[in-house]
Length: 218
Image (cartoon, rainbow, N blue to C red):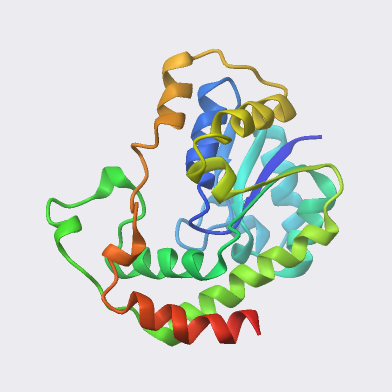
């Protein structure tokens, strides 16, 4: 049985995939993204199981964002593969982070423009709410997991005391050990993090928090 990183957006899944690949794995990046429209996405429109078969034959696994597929298709993935399930405890920050990325068209630090950190952005409240609802939907899959390793963004990326511990546990779950110390250290150092403080980037951050929290957590 192969593996899938089953994640919501802005949870560190790309960095986690790069870590696994740097230590000997061979994961495909978002095969069902409607933006990239890879061959797997196109095949899945008429033969979803066939697209999974193709992925399984070519790779150790793949990194997948749950909102790229419908619930039935996601359940098929969870039944078929060993799952590294990645989520964010704070649904609102997850939604704000994705809304910011979509607004700026910047999803990773290597794509940052020279003036990126000088600007502050105002986000649409209703868009943030819709994304937060998708993040809440992602959490509903936890109850369907069987052979899985569950990890939060906060434990893997924001807590320096647990980051290395959990990174090594994920490698072990995948059947890997550290073979490239420099790339493992790069994963741990956090320099690839795009936005350290979301409140410094968003003009209406506190208004968003007050408006959205009641509608998501009620």
